Structure formats: C-alpha cells, structure tokens
Length: 277
Image (cartoon, rainbow, N blue to C red; front, side):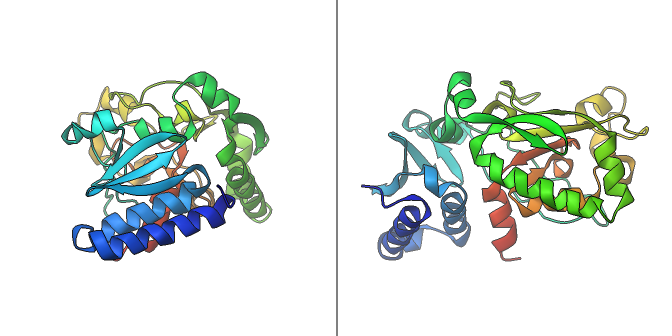
C-alpha cells in the first residue's frame, strides 16, 4: 500500500539504510550509499521499493527488478553480464569551468534498463507521459517529470534577463529547441536522454565561429578533445547555473562535448552537491 509520494519513498529509504547498517555496511562504500540515496532523492515517486536478494540490492520499479551494483542499474538479464556495462554515474562539477579544461567522461556502455523501467521502454510509453510546454518562448515536448523543474528554470533565466543584456541576447538569439526524439547517442549503443523526453538542445542563430559539438569538430581537428573552453560556444553562465540548480547537467562539461545540450540528471547533481572532496 502506498502512503504517497515522497513520504513513502523516504520511509523506504530509511528502512533500506537500516538494512545496510546491519547486513551490508561492510560491503557498501560511501559512494555506493550516496548513489543509492541520490536515486531515491531524484526519482523516489517512481520507485516502488528496494529489497535485498542475498547480497544484491534490487530496486522495484513498476513491477520490474533493477539490480544496483557498482553504480550500474541493470535488469536481471544484463546483471548476469554486468562487466559489459559502465556505471550510470560520473563525476560532475557545478559552476563555471575554470583553469585547465577538465572534461567529464561520459559512460560509453550505459544500459538503458533503469530508464526503461522508470519511464517506459517504447516511444509510445514516453510520448503518453510527455507534454508540450513553453520554455523561453519556444514549445518543447518533454517528460512530465521535467515540467516543474523547467518552469522554475524559465522563471530564473527571465529574472536574469531583466538585468542582463547577455541573457536577453541569448534568449532572442535562440531560434529553435529540440526536445523529445527517439535516437541513440552518437557513436554508442546508448539511448539518448532525448529518447525519454529528458533533454533539450538550445540552438542559436550563430555559434560565432566557435566549436559547439565534438563530432563536427572531429571532422577537421584530430585534437578536438583539447579545444579550450574559450574556443567553444556556450550559453551565459547564469543560464547554465539555472539549469544545474534544478537538476539538469550541461553537455559542455563532457569530454565528447555538446554545448547546446542539457539533460535532466537530478541524481548526478545531487551527488555533485554532496560528494566529499
């Protein structure tokens, strides 16, 4: 029986942490505990529960079992060959890029099992749970879990625009926004976060002669991974900060940089805010 929303999942989380303290404390390192907490914090309303099967941690999501281990979230079938997959987590730092550019590696062999269980495994399921909303004067089609965060971002950016010409110019120079579209991440077998209605690409009239996307740059620059942040087009920092404040990460911080791209990863942001340096 569900008690309802956050309260229910919070009770489940407390119960699960109690189990860890008695049965699995010695087997879970601080990062694993933080990752599990981040998942509940980010998606608690969509997680039915958590249980132990032997030494395995199993998330119950819409009648499906998703196994957690070493940052991986896998179906039982894929869990048996977990060595073939990367963790769904990676290091992300909020705020401006300073000093030497330190790109964030993106999981190349990420399984879609977790998102398939959480949000739907087919385009029809995702579309049924997605809505058209207005964002900075454009229509975007996104999953319903992003709607309220995106509304808060919209308000925050418009507040900045009232005092910043840079932000006003950014808004007026934006010509199109791409949102939900079923496709793979370029160069991988991973489903893009666009496939789940969890990502937005913000396209300006001009990139002003700067780099914006690793694949375009790689066509003529074999050292594309070392292109400095100053030579890359990017939104105003206050825009990036607004997205990060409400659960989105920016693709400009990846090694395979995609500077127009924002995706909803509240678990990654939660870890960035709570990790011990």
